[in-house]
Structure formats: C-alpha cells, structure tokens
Image 1 (cartoon, rainbow, N blue to C red):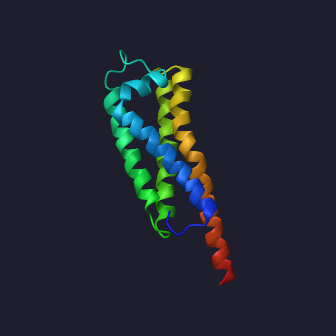
Image 2 (tube, one colour):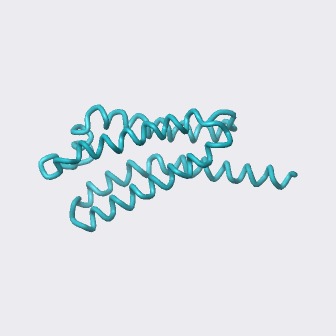
Image 3 (tube, one colour):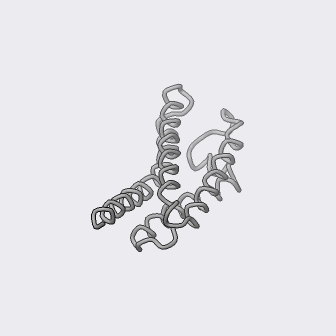
Length: 137
C-alpha cells in the first residue's frame, strides 16, 4: 500500500480494516461471530475451528497488503479477490448442499463482499493507472 495515490490507498485501507477487524474478532471469539451470522454452534461443532483458520488467513492477508510496496500490491490484491470469490462460491455451494439457510448464506457471502468491493476498485484503479503510464511511454 506504500507510495500509492491517496484514493487507491484509501480503498486498500478500507479493505484491510474490514478484513483485519472482522478476522481479529472472529479469531478471538468464533462463537460470537457464529451468533452474528446466525450459524448455530450445535449443528456446526467444527465451525469455530474453521472460522479461526479463515480469520488467521485474513489477518495475514491484510497485513501483507497493508505493508506491500507499489510493485507487489497488485498481485496481493488479485489474490484477495480470488480468495473472496471462492469464499462466496463456497457459501453458495454450502447453501445448495443444505448446510446453511438463505439468511446464513447471505451473512457468509456479505462478509466476503464487504472486502471484495474496495479491493476490486483498488485493483481496477491500479490497472488503469498502469495502462496510463504505459501509454505515456
């Protein structure tokens, strides 16, 4: 995120704050997050472990993106987009399999979409900026 134009830095910062804060809370108290997402613990006893795995992944990603230099941030944002897209697909497939109801599925999808929107915007702006710089040469 270092040495970015201010509006790209703001988008990346928003994504990092969303990803980091939600993940830190999830890691510290996965049962609370399950309650917020309307996911019953009794029928998903392995879910706190899965939430902690997801949470530590997102904490690491947020920190990597936040401290990335200008050359590596695009690759990291692309990885974040791919991860969020697979999270959305996984939630959808879990719903199709009957593991979650519609409300639970949308709760899971929206956690990924919340980070996906600013990271997609930042990635698009970085690609556009890169194209503009190449056209000037």
